[in-house]
Image (cartoon, rainbow, N blue to C red; front, side, top):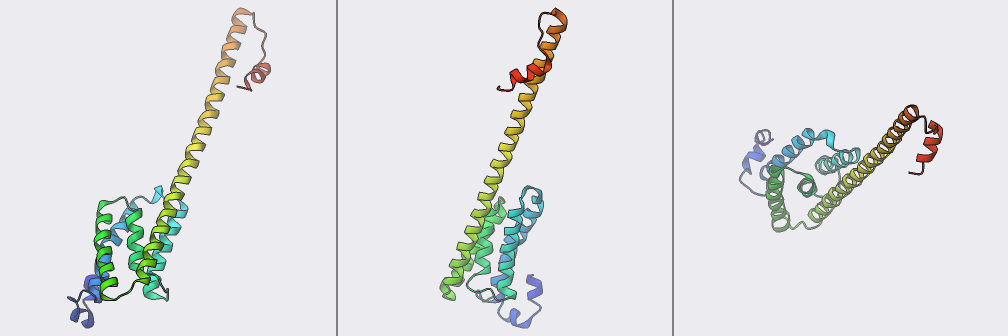
Length: 189
């Protein structure tokens, strides 16, 4: 990205200006690409909602540059979302560094308080929604696993009792419990 931007003479002329294009866009690429690699690595662990929010955050940030998305800073949206969603130390540390740089530029150099604050708020809200969806889906999976293991253990107890009674019935001829009455007797358990 940096080498591509250096092709333009207007970018080369302002490469050492902290508020110019080069020093504003290139640092964002480090946490962004690391975050994308992390997402690709753990793609099967994410649920459908998390993928949708990831795409939404990226679309809003790109839409800020390409289209007309008002009142949201794409940098602060991406960086705050990546900071809260990533498990990688590289992504978190680089996100913090680039977020500090972005906020210094926006607050002190450009005097832009609206888009940066809205971007941070949106990124945090979307990240928290994904975290809540993960917890909810994890509880649902855990409950379904518990229910299936409870049903399996109940069925195992029935089969063990059925085998036990049928062996006694054949060996001793002293029990006259049929299979149907055994199921009826165990059902309330």
